[in-house]
Amino acid sequence: MPRELIHRRILQVCLLLTVALLFSRVPQWEHGSWILISVGAIIGPFSPLLTFRKSMLRALGTTAGLFLSAILIALFSHLPWSIPLLGVLLAYGIAFTSQQDYRYFIMIVTVAIALNFADMYVPFTPFEPLSFFASRAMGVFIGIAIYVTLEWLLFGRKEQRRWAQATNTVFEKKLVAMLDQLTDLDAARPCQHQALLSSLVQAQTEHAESLGGLTDTTEIDATTKQAKRLQRIGRRLQMSCYRQLAASAFQPHLISINWGVRRGRLQTLLRP
Image 1: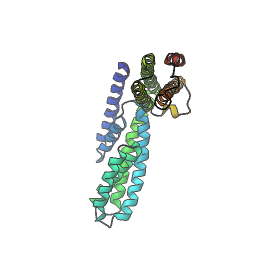
Image 2: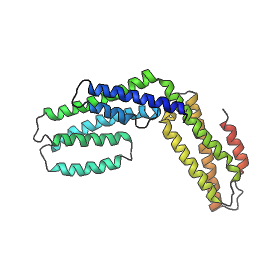
Image 3: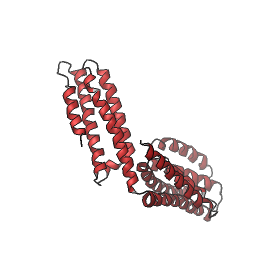
Image 4: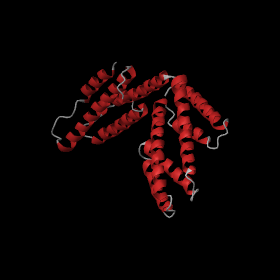
């Protein structure tokens, strides 16, 4: 990534954390730290292409977690012996969802925090769980509101386009480097194709994840078109490697792919 983008993003992150810290401390709210925690969690991926999506997932996960917490508290609040069992299940749930989509992870975390809070007030008045739900929701959604307001109104949509263009440039350079390796491939050595295929799949995955779902949107602009074009070129090169590996393994008598011709065609597609 260009240094200018990284340096500017560092300043933006510092501004976001400063505003969140002011909102969490100035009102002297008991649970104000949740505002700062929410903003810190959202900006964790650093790239603005990923942080905005994460803010939406955090909102969805928190809402679902609060509803699930209310159901569990209503069912098990008068059964104190069930708390350890739920704790074990939630521990496994957190470990599992940490490798899944972020919305499921934050949902289970919200449930764990809510049940821990409710357990401290057994027997409790009906007001106590409601106060926690309100505080948790306010802290999370105020943090999301701070992030979205600064990201969209102050930093602007152009910042996301700059990051998308830089991401496309990085992936394009990787594709060019891989195309330069095609003429050195030996049809009798499948390990070379496997190494190239592995590098290509990893580069494609990193490119798609770094865009944060940009290629899945219906909005069409130059950056989105370029990202989709690069992904198509990557898939074509990937299929060529798969066909060469299949031919080497099952039909070695067939003529192998002419990588010089293939390289020329893919390089033509790379030109805008």
